[in-house]
Image 1: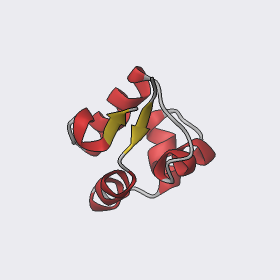
Image 2: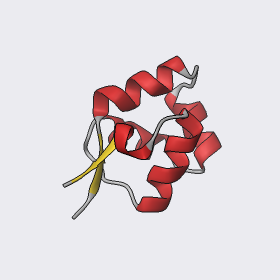
Image 3: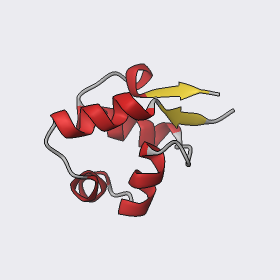
Image 4: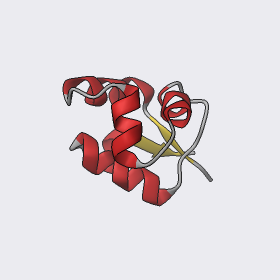
Length: 68
């Protein structure tokens, strides 16, 4: 099983919160490249990263991510 982003919802939440990918990366402690790949659905995330990103984007985890 892996946790992947609902790409449209993730990008929309990031933009509506006023974050660039680089700013979200800086605030989350993740790399810019990793944020970019998450947003394109190319990388999965761990539970801690999903929780941190959801908190920063002020959305429930299940709204931004799904388990495959």
